[in-house]
Image 1 (cartoon, rainbow, N blue to C red):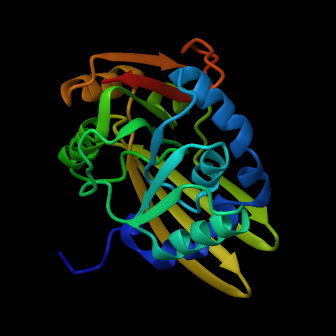
Image 2 (image 1 turned 120 degrees about the vertical axis):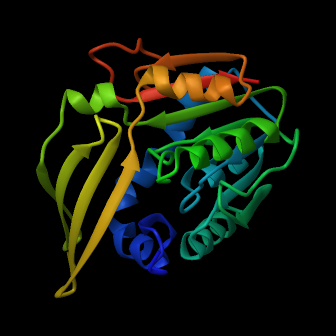
Length: 249
C-alpha cells in the first residue's frame, strides 16, 4: 500500500467531478425518481436512510415531503452542499452524517433505505460490499425495505463503449473503459479538463448481475428480493435501462 486513497475516498476527485456528476438537470430529476422509488417500496412515510447521499438531492426532497431523513456520505464537500440545499428548502427533518457505508449502522431505525445512482460496488474487497449491505439490513426496522439502482452486467453488455466524452458548462470528461476479471470489474480512466487544467483519475468498481446482487442481499439477511429494469417497475429483461432491486427485511 502506498498510502494513496482509493478514488472513492479522495475528496479531490468528488470535488472535481461534481459539475459532471450532479448537473442541474440531474438534480431536477429527484422528485420524479422518488415518486417511483416510494411506489416500488410501498412506503408513504417514516424514517429514511439515504446512503450514500451525495449532494442531498434525494434526501432534501424526502424531508420536504415529511419523511425523517438521514443522509450519509464520506465526502465532506458534498455534505456541505447537502446541508445548504436543506437550509434553502426550509430544513425539514434532515440529518447529514459524515461516515463510510462500511461503518455506518443504526440498528432497527429506518423504514426505508435508498442506494441510488450506481453507488454500490466501489470496494476492491467484495467482503466490504457485503459489510455495507449488512449495515443497511441491520439499520432497517422489521419489514423495512431497501431500493437500489445501479448499472448491471446485463445492461452494460448491451451498450458498452470503450471510449466516450461529455461536457457540462465548459468542463470536459474523457473516458476510457475496460471490463476485466471475467466481467466482474470495470476499469475507467477519466481525464477531466476544466479551467485550463487537466486531471486524471482511475475509477473502478465491481459489476453485479441481477442474480449476483440479489444473492448478496439474501446472504446478508433480506428475505425477499425483486429485480426490475428501471425505477418505473418495468420487467428486468433485454430492454432494461438499469438494475433496480427492491429488498425486504
